[in-house]
Amino acid sequence: MKPEAPAPQSALATRHDLTKRQAAQLAMSLQRLAEDEHAPTSVQDPSLAVDVHLADSLVALDVEQLRLAARIVDIGSGAGFPGLPLAIALPGSDVRLLESQSRKCRFLRRLVAAVEVDNASVVESRAEEWSDGLGQHEVALARALAPPPVVLEYAAPLLSRGGALLDWRGRRDFEEEAAAQSAARELGLELVDIRAVQPFPEARDRHLHVYVKTGETPERFPRRAGMARKKPLG
Image 1 (cartoon, helix red, strand yellow):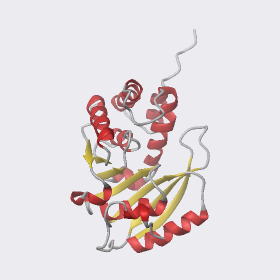
Image 2: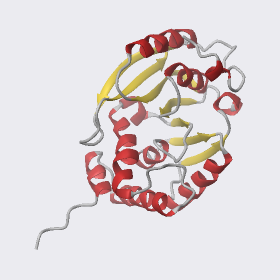
Image 3: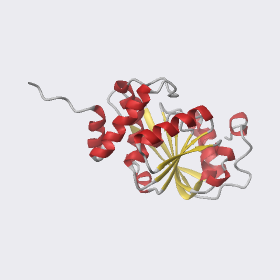
Image 4: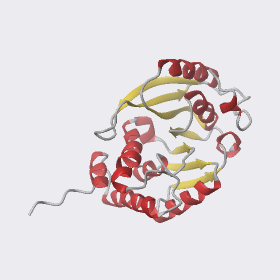
């Protein structure tokens, strides 16, 4: 008899040196995603979600600043990715799942409770309106959220000096990157790395853009809600 293949989340746990409990929590997150008809994602099948959601989120563990961070915010958390898997992987960090839509927040609260992730909490607010979060985070996460200048404007005010933004991107676009560089300078951020990543074998042209807050973000930021998208920097 052939030995049973390890569950995909177990392979991820091995890759990222996670415990059996953490692997079980990852498995539970896949199960709850599949079972909840109100999950705000089109990818609920565990055989797909293990790559598209879990592996794609956990690839950020290769960034040392994330592994060392005590306070992390996942901006526009949606269905909880990348914030929830990273909270599971980093139990010593305080991870805020920042989401503006009430429906998605209700799902996130159910998911956090079901998976028993004690170091993750849901914040229902727009990034521009969350005054309690200003300057409070060592790392901000943004995955499939908005064009780069918009993401940078959401993140910069939430970061402490020396903090980092990790922005998930696909194929490199040099015109887009030039606009992001211009916005970064205005916000007190500096691009320090564009890291090619392959979170699962079929993934192509994936990159993590890493920015560090090297200066103060001007007091005029954050602008009022909606302005970052309406009149983007850069």
